[in-house]
Image (cartoon, rainbow, N blue to C red):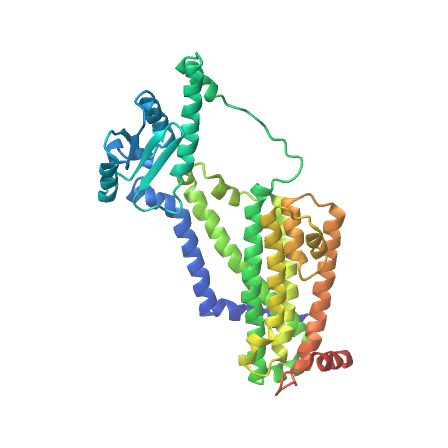
Amino acid sequence: MKQFGTIMGFELRGYFRNKIFIGITLFLVVLMGVVMFFPQLRSAFGSDSADDTPAGELPLMLIKTSSSEYAQLVADTFAQAFGGYRIELTDAVTQDIKEQIVSGEAECAFVMTSPTEYVYYVNNLSMHDSNRAVADSVLQQVYQMNAMIGSGMTQADAAAVMGIQINGTVENLGKNQMENFFYTYIMIFALYMVILLYGQMVATNVATEKSSRAMEVLITSARPTSMMFGKVLASCLAGFVQLIVVFGSALVFFKLNESYWGDNELIKSLFNIPPDLLGYMLVFFVLGFLIYAFMFGAVGSTASKLEDINTSVMPITVLFVIAFVVVMTSMASGNVDNTLMVVCSYIPFTSPMAMFTRIAMSTVPVYEIAASVAVLIGSAAGVGYISAKIYRVGVLLYGSKPKLTSLLKAVWKA
């Protein structure tokens, strides 16, 4: 136990003294600060919304109708639907309207050839331009109102019929997938980044010790199990501390600027994770990290040169990417309880992401969660033990990369 504590402390100090580690952490903290302070900065240097812009400064939208009878009704309805534009009726010919748009005097125009047909003129059609969809809805409403007025209804009665509101309530008996989607996405993405980053660092550190022959000296004075578990747990703690610093600073910055975010439910929901879901997140995050970090460490001990690390860890990286793709695909489809996800919930290499996703976005029985966690704990311990064996054998393996069969035979005899 003393050896384990000494090794873990030494590795932790190495991480916290690493300039790259400190630099990345500070960069992420500053980035979180910029994002969280953005509404305050925007309000200090400019207007928050188009509603504060004087009407004369709003972009001009020209409206030309085929009949003067419903022109004012169209203009009034367009004014309500397009709050970010200054609506103006025009009788100009089409060529003049085009020239106004090209010159920048007007931003766009709707020229209606009939109550149900129009031509939309715009200088540069943006890929995010939704004016046509809004206009379709508006003109459909105008046409229906005209039809009702023609049938004997007053304009007020027709407007009341068209403006009727339907009220409905939702009683959710399970999980709200949309609400928990962001928690799940953040956890999955954080696990993906931390495992790839710190797993690579574990493998690189082990390979560096081996290439410098320092490992041969260390292995004679410390048990392989203590060395492997000390290195991996130190990297896990370093990654955990980094995440706490980054997301903790984001929470502090958000609290300082909460009033500036207003009613932005997306941002607010990110900082209101339910305690039970946060607990599951920590459990699956730590256990998943340990399994992959142990494998990265074992692979690093078999590399004879530092240059071989990227090739050696490729199978582990591919395995993890496959798990990531399976989970993200299921999340995007909205069906996180499909057969593949259920199976992946009990495979230790995929369950940290698959089971957590199911817990967050669906209703999973307690016994399934307990079984998945038990498999993960046993797998983490087993993979750690085997990785320590490989680490011990890998110390003396130099030259060509060892074959898997010969490596397993050496581990079995060790």
